[in-house]
Image (cartoon, rainbow, N blue to C red; front, side, top):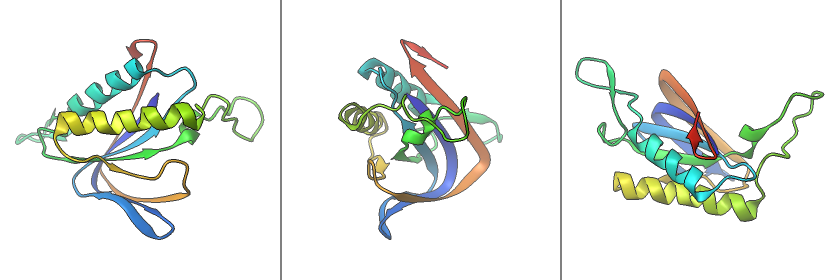
Length: 152
């Protein structure tokens, strides 16, 4: 799995002009599921996302997690994170997991965060044409991947 995590002051996602998820202060997480990803990969990324210390403490040092900062999470599925652009100019998405694998892992990621944070993880709509609006805070953007037991 590959995540792009952005610390935000605000984020929302719309499908067909309707807001399907929105948060104030917290994390916007773009979630890409790759063929071969496992529940264990997902669980590692859930734990790491919840514990990631990228929010400022009272001294202005990035030393607080989203839970410590009482933030929220908006998770948006995005298969294009798995694009392979090594050959030619048209990205290949062959690495992206099929929906029968990707949807359960995306949902597991969202539910896992809910369990740790004790609040709803806002969501986009898997496979939909979505418009994402955000105000990046910092900006702070982190890319994480989990594969075969390792987080990169």
